Length: 91
Image (cartoon, rainbow, N blue to C red; front, side, top):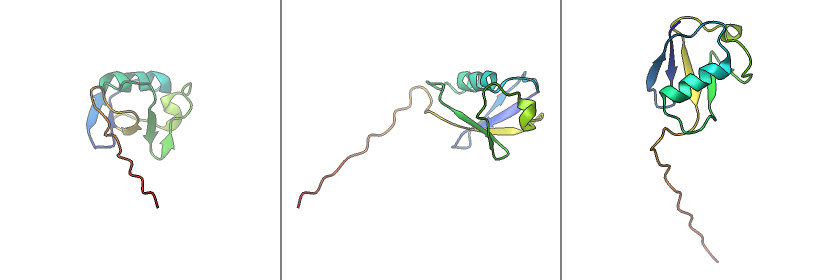
């Protein structure tokens, strides 16, 4: 089965070779590998369901061929987060 994974910037990657009985934790590993995410702290969302149980099958959430999952997580490798400037006003 082929599914699509979209990030918060609407960039889409394709994940192939996913079976309906694939565990959520295995899908997360593939998403992390495909998107070069530095940590394993990601959330997958499909049809307003958050895949919060890593030991659940994808079939449980109703995922089918060609569906799109949204992932929210860490920045890709090599991406640097801007530092916020703190300004203090003393009165």
